[in-house]
Length: 520
Image 1 (cartoon, helix red, strand yellow):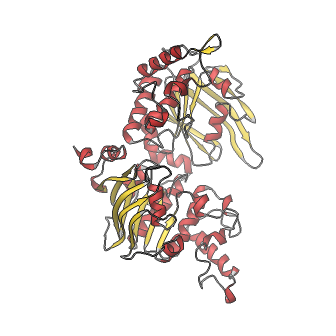
Image 2 (cartoon, rainbow, N blue to C red; image 1 turned 120 degrees about the horizontal axis):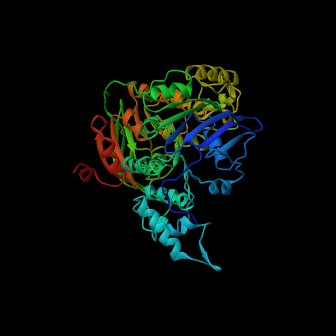
Image 3 (tube, rainbow, N blue to C red; image 1 turned 135 degrees about the vertical axis):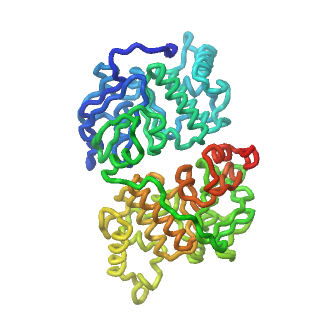
């Protein structure tokens, strides 16, 4: 079992040093001769677009992937790391984006799992519980060692993940997108722990995130990967998100959403008292009402898993609601399935592009016309598809929406996340919709594509579409929306004009406080 965390003594200035790390897969060079150093007592951010090689590099440090070439030094000593057990023994802990907790077990049972202290042949549970309680107190984690994981909110579950690494004596913490599931106040709490406690005690943190404002807030240094290569490391002091974005993409990127005030008109989408069945006894959506006007963007904020997915599926005809009404331009649709809803003028950018948005084995050209393949524009005589027209359409759309590589024949599954998403946006906007439902439109998308997709969403609003934006990224909701509603456990906690919205007020509603309470 680990020793109590105290100010550690080090052999070297650097907690981790990578020298010439290369990782080749059969068709991909994921990491290309990467070298970088993380200082003791610091938070070191690692950023890069999707596919830049961040996750592969962290898996190599944590022993989940062997490097093809190169070496790792831990505290100045050469450290061959063959598996996570090696990494843990060298004081490296990793908190994954998707938690690895056993829900029916307690906090203590999860923390000690695989590292149980024994007395003879039995587990010394009281000793383990005392050690867990000691660590909870040391880092002000506010956890009950006997609470079951299934009863804890996400922010506390993440603390249990961190506690697991501390219990095993971690001096170097790797965190992969750690704020993706946290409210703003939970994020603040995590940052206080990492910077003011863990790093300040002489330990080291590697912080992976795509949220550049968070990187600037928490880190001491930032390293940027692009296309598997290390572009450089800069001190955070004096850095801006524009500078980091330029390093990530290789060109200037507009970091702010440029939009004029909305000019809302008539109500185009109205949801009245909608309830949708959940997986368990509780409804996923309970008695939800709101409307979206032509010429405005209504943002729905909330942490993932609070009924947003089921709400969107009901509105787009993919799920039958239990009760309530949905009016599309003032009309209800009898037996509203996805095709009827689409024909009523609703475009849908789904949250999972691979499952719902694209047919990965089909070509670019075929994916560009999904849902429109029966239309006269693409159907030739006798109902056969006009393949030449479809190919030309793909060429025009690829150019207009900057889909790269430019190919009408490439299978959709071969595109990066950003380019795949552009195909979906292009297709949905070509249908000439009156209502656009954009669900997690930039999830898993790189910075350059985010900028492009945000412009398309604002352009749709300015063309008079009613836009419903659903996003777990609070920054995205704040910058794109004209009005914002917040969902928590299937219910709406409140509504606020985007011009009056604050991180704190929205964060309280995202944590379950109704608007009046959040304002008090």
